[in-house]
Amino acid sequence: MPEITDMTLSQIIDSLRAGALSSQEVTQAYLRRIEHLEPFLHTFITLTPQLAITQAEAADRRLAAWRRDPSLPTSPLCGVPIAIKDVLCVSGLPCTCGSRILEDFIPPFDAHAVARLRAAGMVILGKTNTDEFAMGSSTENSAYGPSHNPWELERVPGGSSGGSAAAVAARLAPLALGTDTGGSVRQPASFCGVTGLKPTYGRVSRYGLVAYGSSLDVVGALGRETASVAMLFQSMAGYDPQDATTLDVPVPAIQLPQSPEGALRSLRIGVPDEYFIPGMQAEVETVVKRAIGELASLGAEVIPVSMPHTEYALPVYYLIAPAEASANLARYDGVRYGPRSEAETLWDVFRRTRGERFGAEVKRRIMLGTYALSAGYYDAYYNQAQKVRTLIKGDFERTFQDVDLIAAPVAPTTAFKIGQHGDDPLAMYLEDVFTLPANLAGVPGLAFPVGFDHQDLPIGMQLMGRHFQEEVLFRTAHVYQLVTDWHTRKPSDVLSQ
Image 1: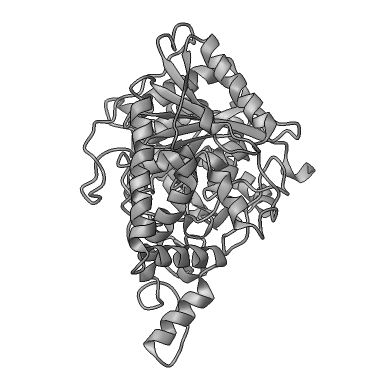
Image 2 (image 1 turned 90 degrees about the horizontal axis):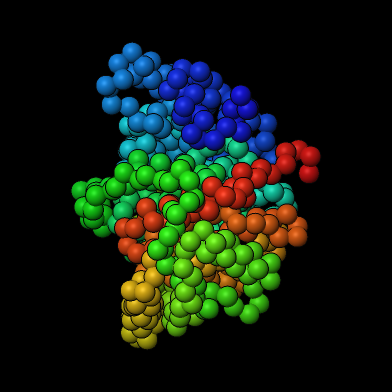
């Protein structure tokens, strides 16, 4: 038997259900590895070893009862450890959102996605590091310090779900939850060489997710391989009356093919020229096109397509998302949440609390959003951006009349060095140029590893599909992973770097 932390999710589940391993043994193995490597990676903001052991003990009792009586309802994920991005509420645990303005906030309830996973019997290892309020592409904007990429410690793991992606890549957790507002699951998945899903907007409840951009935010999933992510998605997706944006659309039982033979026959994959731009890292383009060719060799039909409004996604996103952030973050004023800076007047309390405890990037986006929403500029900026957003959505709708999926790079580069974009916010924003359109259109996207550059840094590809067609994404990526081994590659022990 391999080391527990090197086992695939299916191997862990099989061992738990057969009684060959207990959830406590699995949980302890991950906790030991976290203790060993976390000082070098900083993937977690809060670790919960006592809670994890308590939940593992409860999971073992459920599994023992199931083995005595297999008719009892038991989730396949019962007893499996998971890490939770620290923008999702977990009852009784801190929810900092990577910000000093929420450092004392402990929510009294679970996010809906977390509650579903708890009900399934999963074991929470801790809350992972994130760019402050999920605003960033590198996890450098966390008030608690940056996370490090396990493939090379001097590089970022991506963001804003960088802590979750790095934890999965370093075998500190078999699964993790992230969030994706403009690529914050898919981009770190690409940088860390793991698989990450951005579901359709409205597929997974946002209840208990601390809002950044309410029309863009989704709760996503990260794992080493597609089958793991599909299983996690099925456990947390579904209608929630507490979130008016969720839709009552059935979540199908996902059946992944066991063999690549004929599995992609009749599948049509569109490849838009607009996602291969001047200035992108040449190896990214080469590797992604090679992966698309592999899908073609497996039976898929590859069709060139055009999505002419893609070039406007970046400015549109950075008008709409900051505008929504400006409104959502107005509630953090030192009165209702978190610590308060003392001052003589109420307005000074607001100014000092927000001025001292929000980070530079959050302040930048609040100011951008407030400006875009201000009198005299609303029509020229915010309203115009919403009109162009409709055109971007129309590009997807027209393209999906001719193809089933769209294949594209996840990011224009591999993981960059910590501090490389520190003085250039625009360069940082450009790291999301290929992931933003899916959020603006609300369509699902799945990122997965397809190769490495000359520095042995992972390269990811994303597939985007029609609304509520996550199953097609899973099936296609899973078939690719049946015939390739990129998703099985493991970064060397960070202690040797």
